[in-house]
Image (cartoon, rainbow, N blue to C red; front, side):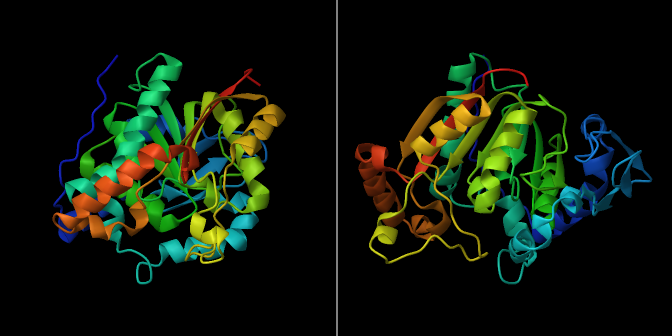
Length: 339
């Protein structure tokens, strides 16, 4: 079994370098051998007919809708009515570099952070990989992965560096472009498209793993069961969630609410609910493990010399004893048949 890599080498790429690779990624994302293989797997959600690439500008289907390609990113949101209203607002927030993050930050994080800060982002992914290897009794290398809600692709990069073959999608055009730019910059094989969690344009049993890492809670509440059902359909065996299981303490006292800046409600994936969905959709709940995270989205304080290390150490100690009441859950589900 290949030794997992936990590489925290700092990325000092410049804005000019990222801009150069952003241009290269437009072609690479749809013209590599890896892309050719993935495009051959795409099917139209309304007909399950396949696609062919036409002039690098769109995917053509005999009976379904043609898929436009914007800056090298196929856009499958044309099948989603939700993406035209509720999700479109969220996508526009994440596409706006002026009110959210600059493109270079999206592409490089967390590898442009200090070592401690980057560790907070990457260690859960390392633990996820180890749990998957333990349960599946096979190396993470050569797993085929659908990274749902991939954002700027830092999870996809981590998985690809373990040898996995990664396809990612996001509701945000900018995030999908950032992920493809990241892979071009790192010379990694991968493929990214714009899409919707409730409508996955792939045949049954396409991927070894379907993974949501801190992303399924972005899906509108009424569509989360559909997204899980779709994940089960395109997975060969394992569906993995790493997301929020309980309401935060401050919310319980009315001091905070689960509404993010992008306007979406942060859904909580409790164990009883996951057991219900597993029973409903023909899956087995293999693992439900909670941890107390270090609040990585507000962790600039960890960059402060000495103080950052002390705060991280204190929270880690609390996290060890309070893991059962944690605010992050690793959930691994297994299909019980191939349907």
